Image 1 (tube, helix red, strand yellow):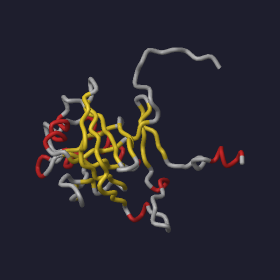
Image 2 (tube, helix red, strand yellow):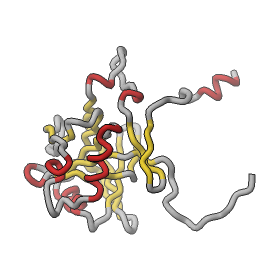
Image 3 (cartoon, helix red, strand yellow):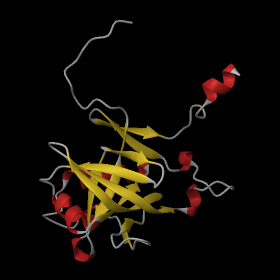
Image 4 (cartoon, helix red, strand yellow):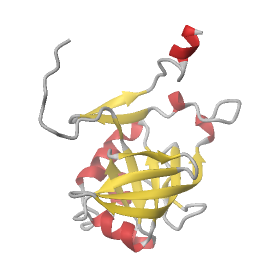
Length: 187
């Protein structure tokens, strides 16, 4: 199949949609981010990219802890709202109807309605250009009991996670094949 070369851009599909909580007390805030991902297994670490001009950027610098909350499809409106409102002008928890829940290992709240949250301590900040990359060590994983299977591990189909591709949100709700299936089929 013929390939067409396009100009360099941020075409990476899909990107998980997460709600990053930062700040403490009455400064607690939510920022919707799609530029995120796991960056290390041991210790477990995740990175989120944030523009320095964003209100949350200053909060992330002030309190070097954050939580990566995974909203379900039912929380899509709240996730979109938190990505279009500025925390400088108001309380995103109140505006979105989301509930702050005390972190177990961090001072920053997680979001009670999100089925999965990663509590993180910032280990490094890398300035990349338009965005700074906040790398956080995952110090606790908080999961709703309803998303766990009988073995006590996460059933990702029960999260009803959302993703961003281009300018559209997408549902991520079913597995295709287990990792390593191609090799096992060859053996």
